[in-house]
Image (tube, rainbow, N blue to C red; front, side, top):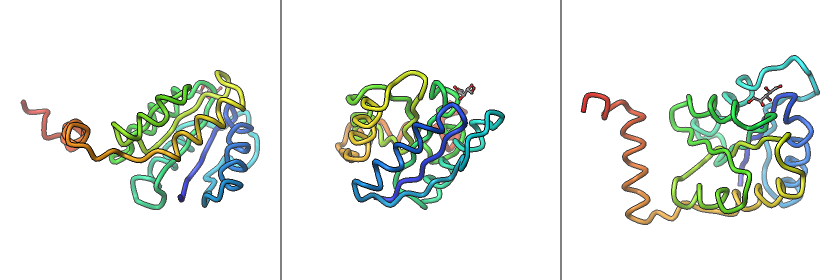
Length: 153
Ligand code: RB5
């Protein structure tokens, strides 16, 4: 699977580990930065780059890491076509894909350790959208809101 990854200084080290893990599992990784630790960098730069790449179809999935994962998630969800979720447990990481078609995983490097992060990432990339009618119906409502169709109701 093609996966784009990104992180600010808060998530830099964990992002490096995630990249290595996914590459060793056989995934194609595109690292959109940061490419070096910079305590003054800003999470939106990386979250937006990852979300845009996924929304443009350049990768099937994205992963963004910041300190808490919150800022990355807020920023990524501003991009049309990105469905970002903050997951610090394996259930949410796979269920978010299976039910909600989540395509950007957000992690907080100050919240979880490397081993649970590895398990979360593997749960996420190993999951697929169910396509079940009820899940598609709910997703369609989200997509409709994203298009702005529901704002006049
Ligand atoms: C950076 O210090 C930190 O604020 C950022 O990584 C993130 O936690 C924001 O949500």
